Length: 397
Length: 187
Image (cartoon, rainbow over all chains, first blue to last red; front, side, top):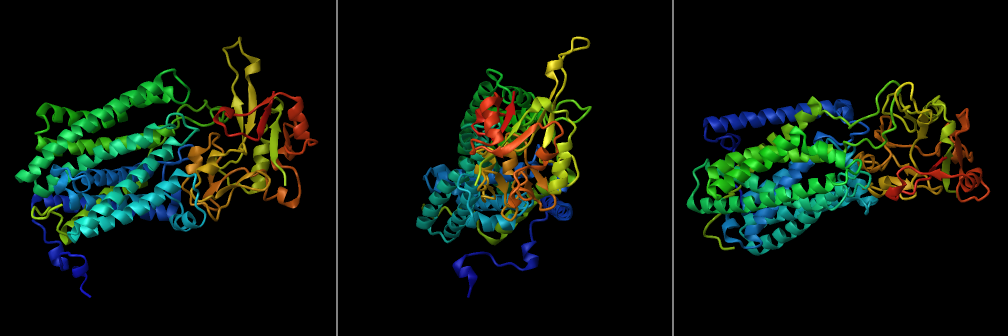
């Protein structure tokens, strides 16, 4: 049976698979990705030997960098799915060129997210079994995991039909993927929002904020994906899309900053214990001011406003700082949630009462987390070689 | 079938930590600072010498509050955390996937990772070692030299704990969260 009739793909030998243009940037990215994946494999090796003791997580700070990185990748996936749906589900003309490239990006980032979480969850195989046998229906993690599984299934089918130019079914599964993806993603926000014990996270903010920040992440990634695809020499059709994308991103960033301001004000107002103090610590930290605010929001926002969205090359570079900012958003989300000690009386002899809970990621955590970015790069390279991800202007939507 | 709870006459606590040792011994808890099911909280003496507030210094023994509405149970994705027939919140290590969501959700920092089973562990009122054999004591309660702990069936109006809770004022930790703890601090 000829598989390429079922799923059209480019056939490659090993030599032709690695036959990319030997430009300095390409060669750098190749070795950079290989290095990252090597680092991830080494990190996994250490984890398999030492278990969670290889990580800097503790009883009071049980979630660490790997959870942050998992959130980083799945937010990226949902973001790409939402932004691509603007074109082929909602028929917004400027976005119609993004379809396949964004969906394969969504598939790759969620697979990378799963790869990271597999080394954080202590018993991933047991998880698959008991997720089905004894489902915890009141658990946001159960809903998030189950819906993300379904979401992955739908977007794979969406890509399959996009690749076969079957626009009727790609639209149906695109819509299904979008709806289930939004549900899964807001449930991920609820994983934090449902924590009644932690006033800094508890509430409606995270389920909503996750959707908004996913759209911002998706926009940054689209800039990076298209900047890389066209090496900054954009055809007119793509240029038009990217100008529209930066205008949309400008609006999204404005809303995001508006959200953050009200989140901070409501958290600080009244100085409620475990909330007001934590919020002040959060917004005065370098992670927030430099990472989240300056890199993640302000620099891209200023470029968009200053150029009225037309500085698309600058936006490709600003998307790199944007993604670094997004990383800090995910890290802070996980870390700040756990800052307040749950039992402040729990002290040992001759020690001061605990202030804020401390956490420093270990080398192993960094190796797996950053290494996963290389895994995503490699999967994207492979997808780009095997499939034709460019938009065919002849195709109607 | 009972509904077990514990009252703590915490002002009698002398912080000898016999309860911590007994718990570790009885339940085979591994060594290490993070590995503990129960602990003694310390309220340090307040003020500057010589104006010290003697009344501020006390000890607050604590552990899993065995909540009737346990946040750790409702967040468990595989129902590994469950209420047993005696109302004790327990973990089935065969079902625990070690996502540690329960450790995030517990308002009392009562859970930790047990390296023997590589799952989350917590106080179970000595269900495995005593209640299962029909005993109605816990290791921490039996060993306490100043009789801080009163353990018993809250549904039995004649039990010592029920009578004590009727007679004496008491409070629960973080009761405003709606967790309905079954640990009571006698004032």
